[in-house]
Image (tube, rainbow, N blue to C red; front, side):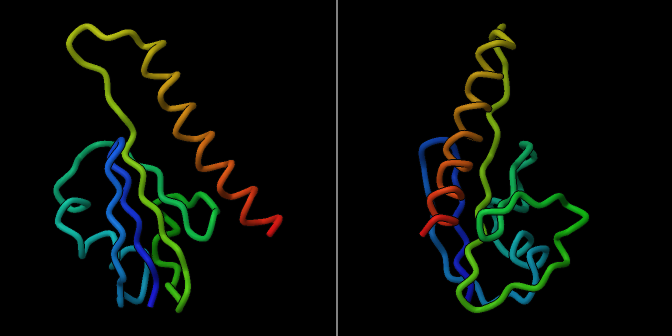
Amino acid sequence: MAILNIYNLTLKHQIETTQSTVAKAMHSHAELKLCMLPKLVILNGEFILSDEWLRPLNKGDILEVRFLPQGGGGGSTRTIAMIAVAVLAGAAAAAAVAATG
């Protein structure tokens, strides 16, 4: 069974999934199907693009989905970029820690 972690800004859902591929896991959860926000998809610490979602999920895999915040209400592009960098830095740090054991 793989683990699916969904990060929606500060909220994290952790779900065990029996889906056989990344794509099936992405389409099996209502929040992921309905949310149109851009997202980062990370499989075992490696960022993957949507054309790689046919990859199989194996027992013990960790699939993470992180929604990227969007601007609105006259917000600054710089602020949005800073938030996106913070999200990416957190994911990169987690991957580095996992890689070094």
